[in-house]
Length: 529
Image (tube, rainbow, N blue to C red; front, side, top):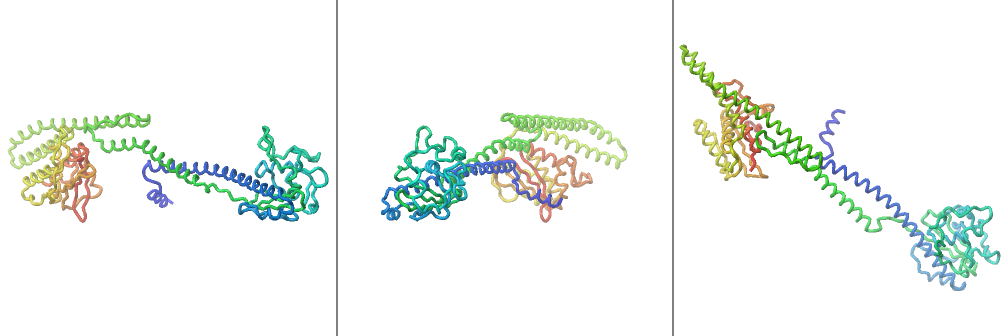
């Protein structure tokens, strides 16, 4: 389990940056909310389109019926043939309704059917879909004659407009729930639906009981006739994707939301990047300008905390450097007195040993004072030719070590590279690096690259044995040497790389050590161009 956990940590599918992770989270959340909202809107649109399709289908059916009803009985067959209806309609003249049309519609419900798309619910056989009335149930077998409204009691489809409860038995309740409310009343505010004239109204109407299927139908007993006009039609399946505006709207909302999230996250996280860059470039006593304390409250507090920390670290380093310099300066006097007193030692061998120890101690003090001076960074920044400075360093080290002069090389013929820096400090830093390469590696090859992305890289490579991986960073600590004997002939005081790093960091650069393949050590110095 631990191996799996470690593997997931190393191979996490999530992006590594805070901006990418937060943006991904917000985009996924926004997409889910958008999908939920569009789903609700889609369901509402589907319901609306379904009702609209039902309304249009009923309108086509009634128009077809009226066209046939207005025709004389002997011409109705040709009138049916001449009807121009959508492809999903089938109209025939029959002696009786189809077997699936078992629900009889009352006059009041027929008027509601004309006014409301799909205005009556379905049921199973007869009139069970209308528990509130609409007349007793009648099946298709009762339709051989002229019908219940022909030649008998007044027709339910007569000239007189019946109210919603007229023609119902006394034990039947009020209006059907599907027709309650003003939106279901065809006479609201005096607006009456234009019903068919009495001479064209159907004598009886049967329809399919199940109003929730795509296949619907209606049978109407024609006036002055014993035949039925049977109309079958299939409702189209509503889909929101039939409109090109739907995918366009979805794409625009998604793209706009993603762009807004990414822009907002970059704006929010930008101060964090600024804070990280300031922390990376921070060098004590380098005169680094403080971060601006503006923006949101949290960002301003973080900038203020960073400025306070940088000020405390700067004071600590400055006090340490001053203390180190003061101690080194104070040691000069007693060392000088000891050298004078050592001259009075009569034993020549003992005198030479004492003077050697005092000279080594004096060299350590001088190195300490040099380290303190270099840490103070008092030299002004100026424009300089880095290539010329490196050539001077190579020549000076070669002159100081004639036996190794041919092993100190400035590789290639690099063009002039202009940077801003402190010439004397940089010369001292590169002199330390080249000297270390000669002392410990037996050679020094200096390579300077062309400026790229605002930085210049200088490599100093040797052919020595290299260092252990754990010692590559430790070599920059004060008084740490690769050669542990403390012999002045084989090594210095251990401050050379510490001074070099202090100088390079003080000018906004960086210095690293790494082993070469198959052997050797390389010092990589990065400077701001």
